[in-house]
Length: 454
Image (cartoon, rainbow, N blue to C red; front, side, top):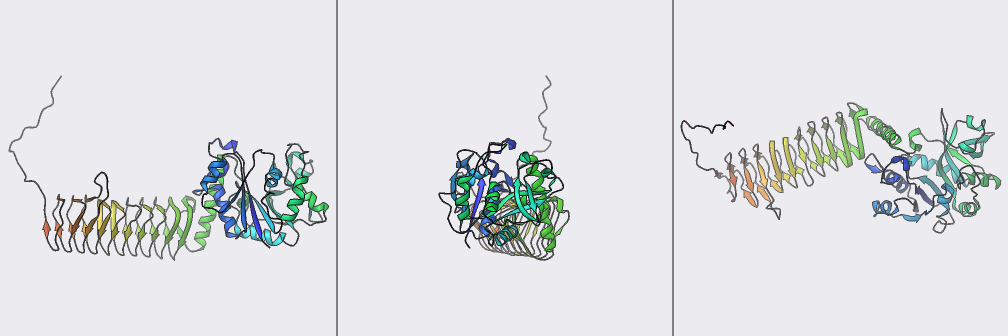
């Protein structure tokens, strides 16, 4: 049976005290709504309908490449009203999953179980049993079958003792949504159209309400303010850390690790404290990441050791490489096997060949460096002339002396050597020595200027 996903994302989020709509607040480096959309796509939904309201243009602009049917809710009249505005575009066959844009962590497996449970009955929901259910809609059962959902403000004292609550996640027959939603009433304490009222309509039609509970409680936690957002961030990160450790990753302290994207890992990976992984990253076998590193959209191959406080952004690192501490690989950096990139070395849009080394205090931008070459401390490739970028080509087995400025475009041939303190502006032939220095001048018994007393 085809599945539609309906995402409620029209709320303002007043308690966030932010100009950014609530569903765009970040969790693990991605908007709350982005997490929900990603999960919906994993379910291979036939279509995704997202209801927007406050900050609508910004919400839509944040997901320009997603195949989403956007529906505007101009008035905030409750969850029932929000789903009702989708009726003009909602298919009349199949089932709909109804999700909230501010409940970002629900897992694909949980939603699939809900779909499987709801298909035979035509309606189902996710519930959760809490020690303290204050403020939530209660699940009223008789003979273990759901009889009603009662909002906290409308509940009796006896009903408020119920610990099983409604999470607001539903799976409902589209045909029944077309039948029930136009009949909703706002005759309640809030004066809103409650989506929960469709449960009573289903029971009146003689339908049984299916229900499941999530594997983890944090899956169904919503976000209303920054305190809740921070708490959910930690729960989500702890869950990701636990999953990685179960896959064999050695996290020195899982409480001080952030994964803000997706990480593919090999065996015996070791990650020290305060490491942040962003985007799509891959760490090969026996990779070690030192404390405080930030790694974004980067592949680091097997047996590579990264010293603390190094930063990677859209880079590729070969096998058995040594990097850092305090190294920076910018977009387009490609390091071959057995390369050494040392402290305070920056590499941008450059390829470094097999076993070449730049051990300290260098900038290598728009460069192509062969194998077995050594880049001296303080060396920079002068790649920018104020208007355009130019390339520096360094061959195999080249020795670049300390404190060199290589003014691009320039080519240093295989086996060439440049003297310390040189500014190289012309090509250097294979196996040649290039030295560019002014003549040293010495004045004996030189007297420094003295400070004038006032």
